[in-house]
Image 1 (cartoon, rainbow, N blue to C red):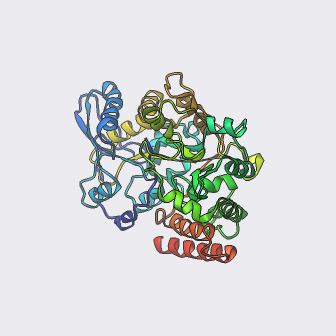
Image 2 (cartoon, rainbow, N blue to C red):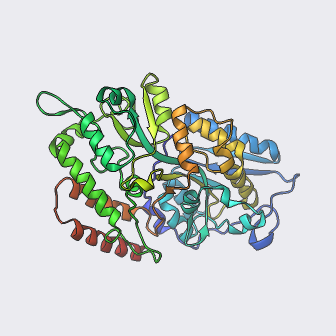
Image 3 (cartoon, helix red, strand yellow):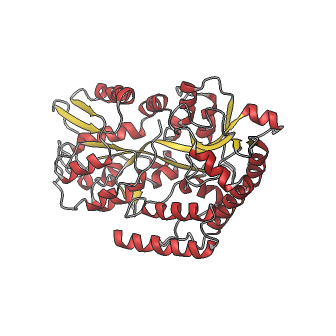
Length: 440
C-alpha cells in the first residue's frame, strides 16, 4: 500500500565497473537490445520488496505480459529491498528487473550506473512520456539520465473526520494554512487535566506523514536552484512553513503535543490516531483509504487537497512512488525492457496494480480508466494527480541526506530548541551543499 521513500545510502558505494550487461536478442538503435525472437525461450527474474498478497497480485499482473510473450517466463521474487538489490548488483548477480520503493535514491541509481539508462529504448520505441505526470517523470531521472520508469504513485492530501467537523460547525475542509490552523484549534479537545484528548491537527514535524517532503510544496518552499545549490535559506516558503508550524505548536501547547504524540498508535495499524478518532485532520497518502476500508469501514471521513499557504496554489500536492528499472548486469536486457515498458506504460497492468495496492496509476489513460475500483474518497488523489500541480523533492547524489538535515532543523525550531530561524536555515543550506559535494 504505502511506498514511503527511504535513503539507502549504501548505493553510494556501488562501483561503476560492475558486471557487464548481456542482452538476449541483437543490438538495435542506440545500443538498445532487441526483444528475443518468438521461438527464443527466456526467463526474466524480477525482484521487489512485495510479499504475501501483494507479491501474488504482482505475479498475476505480470501473467498478462506472459500471455503476450509466451516465450518469456517470469520468476517473481519478493522480499528484496534496496539493500539486497544493491548487493546483487555489486556481486554481479543482479535480477533482470528491479522494483524499488525508494525514489530518494534515483540520483544514486542513475549516476552510479546501478540502474541502466533507458533513453535508447524509449527513443527507439517512441514511448510518449508526456502521458506520465511531470513530477513522476522527474523522480525517475537524474541530470538528464532516465534510469527508471514510474510504477504507481503516492499522492498526498487532507483526510478529515466528518462527524467532528459537523460537531464543531465546520462545513467544508480548509483550503489555506490559516484556515487549517483555525480549524485545528476549534477541533482540539482537552481532558480535565489540560492534556489533549483529541487533536484537531498535529503540527509536530515528523509525526506520521507530517514531513518536510510532504509539507514543503504546500508552502511553495523550494529545495534548490537550477544549478543544484540549496535554497532552503533563500526560498521564503521554508520560513513560512517553520513559522506556521511553530505558531500552531505554541497555540496547542508544545508539551501537550509531546505527551499526545508519545501515546500515538502505530501509523500502519488500526490504532492509527486518525483511524481511531483521536485526530480530526491529517496529511496522508491515498493508500490510507485502503487501510480505512479494511480497518475502520464505518468511519465517516472525507478527503480534499491539502491546504496551501497561498490560496492560489490550492491543488498542489506532494508525490512520490514506486519505480521500476533494469539493473546493471541484467542478463536479458532486451526482454527486461519489454516488461518494464508493459508495466509502466500500459493501462491494463497499471489499473490492475492500482486496484490491488490502493495507489495512484501513473499514466493519463490509467488515471481516467473506468476499470479503477477504488473508494469514492480516492477521487481526490486522482484529481490531484491529473491537476498539473504535483511536486516531488529533487533527486540528489546522496539519496535523502539533505532531507534529514531539514527534518532535524525543522523539529528543533518548531519545538523551541532554537529561536534563530534564519541562522539555522543558512547553516542547513551549507550542510546540504557540502554533503552534495561529497556525493558527486
